Amino acid sequence: MVDGERHWDRQRCAQRFGLRLPVWYRGAGDLDWHAGTTENISCSGVMIRAAGQRAVPGASVVFVIPLPSSRSKSAGCLRGRCRVVRNASPYRGRGEYAFAVVVTRYRLDRLAHPPKVVTLLATSV
Image (cartoon, rainbow, N blue to C red; front, side, top):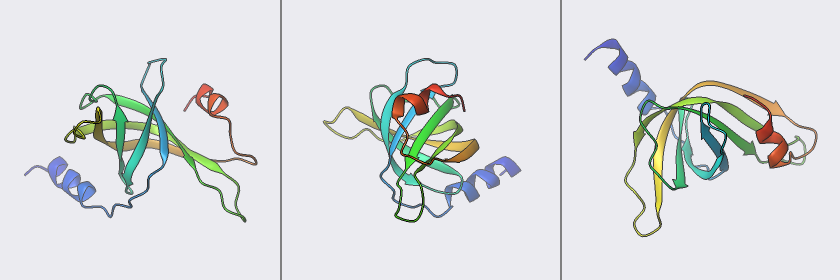
């Protein structure tokens, strides 16, 4: 096993949190955004469920995940870039697939008011 494989094994073993949040993503350089839902999130990556074609392993993806607000904290969003590492089995009869990404760069934006999706997606990551 080479060092990169050991690093990948540690990432895959990171604790996952079963958070079902909306996510918008697109291939780096693409214009069209796609909607999906997070299946789980860890410190190193995200499993995304979405309709349509399977993701291409190795592809670079830009994502936006709006975060829920609480009474004491304002709404925010997680924006970043990631790389597709694998596809999961399709969801039978639903036309949906899941794919795993490793996050390569991100930022957390805290917003005073819940963002409008169009405005959020129009800004670069």
